[in-house]
Length: 209
Figure 1 (spheres, rainbow, N blue to C red):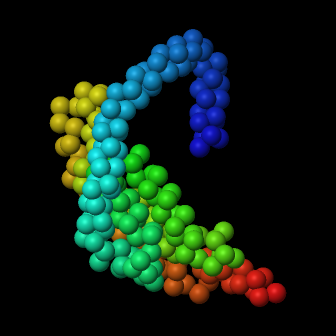
Figure 2 (cartoon, rainbow, N blue to C red):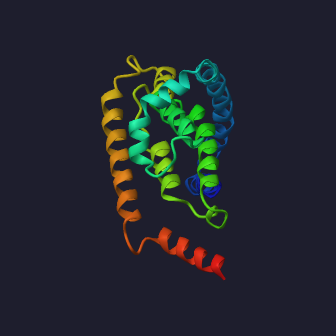
């Protein structure tokens, strides 16, 4: 991402010089920095609220109930994980946070789930992404959002009369993206020439030596 943003800055300065609008680039950089800080402060309240509610749900035991409700789904996607795995409750909470459109709250849960999944692997394979880890990345990135909270806040901030009128499009696109992503993970994991399997095989061979 740093290279992308750096490239955008360089291109903006380049085109500003070549078109004679460098002053507009400078003015936009100064004004938009302030607007960015203002937007962050406005979003902070809502993010803190929902993140706090997620913490309350965790302390009250609601997360365990949600984990049990999602257990048939997580068992289907993460076949082979033991029921007592510490990764399963974290995965369930990550899915729940994404369903509520709380990407900022879902990220730390996803990272914790990644660490727990890594510990499920043999020590010599922990540097290689497992099928479960890749499936979690797909679920976290192309997540189904029943309530796109962050998007609704941004649209409301910029004057949308009905911030949630994009909900049907978001539901359809996110559902399709999750299905396609998980299907590709399944196909690649069953392929004999999967790069992940080649890496795992080579690491087992090195460990055997």
